[in-house]
Amino acid sequence: MTQDLLIDRLAAAAERDPAGAAIWARSGGVASWLIAQGYGPDGKALAAEAPEPVLVLGALRAGALLSRDGVPLPAGVSVAALAACPVDAAVAERRLHITAATPVRANGGVVLRHGDLETLEQVLSG
Image 1 (cartoon, one colour):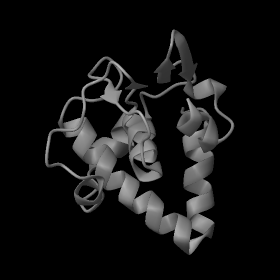
Image 2 (cartoon, rainbow, N blue to C red):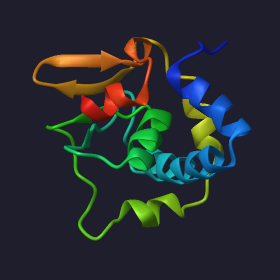
Image 3 (cartoon, rainbow, N blue to C red):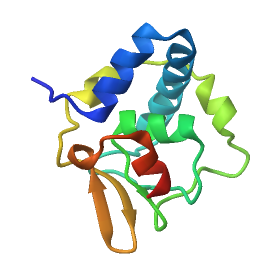
Image 4 (tube, rainbow, N blue to C red):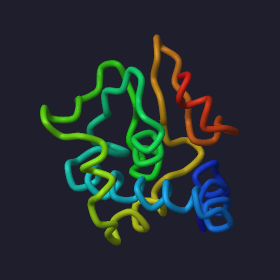
């Protein structure tokens, strides 16, 4: 049984809003790519100083930690290209392993976890 976290509330909101649904779908492509590249819980952290919202959503869905010390996207890989990737079953599977204790953002020794988040702005301002 999964917990009701910010990513769950965002998914539910996306179902009710066409614009939100489009961003949510694009973040699924990003999440699929991140998972395939080894980002996520017990995997690589993602470097993100001022990440784009669709990248943040994708990282949330992949369970990837956003950190200054993380691994950057490879040169030449754009968020727009990742957003065009197909969404695969790994994204739904990964959600089963994301809990309130899964880290989201590390900044200056402060770690935000999924259970700490009420808004997407908390992650973006990290």
